[in-house]
Length: 115
Image 1: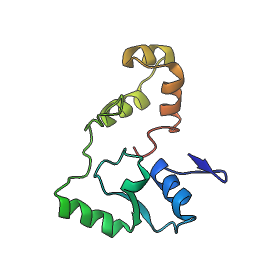
Image 2: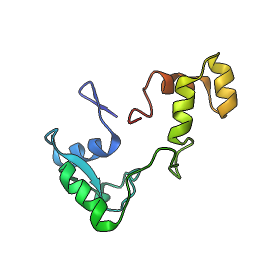
Image 3: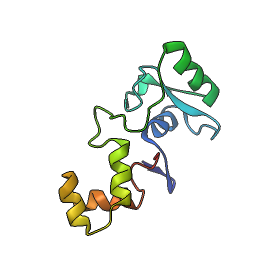
Image 4: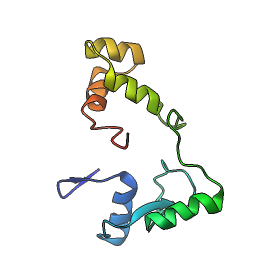
């Protein structure tokens, strides 16, 4: 999402909409342990240290390379493959079953920016 010309993760945008500007030192924490959740009542702000403590306290493990988000079309490994792939974007798109515009956004790091 964009706000004031800056790009923010959706969870951070939700926090800003709910509480106004928040310091860059704060991160969004998901009380439901689903980082793709966008329910405002599941997202709270906190420090990176608090977020790490959540992992330990709840027995969660950070995402590992190659782990698939059940809501995502790709694994992180596939994103790396698309970014390194040579050839026409139409061929890459066909191989992965997506549009050429999606391949273009991945290669330009407009999507999957966390990888």
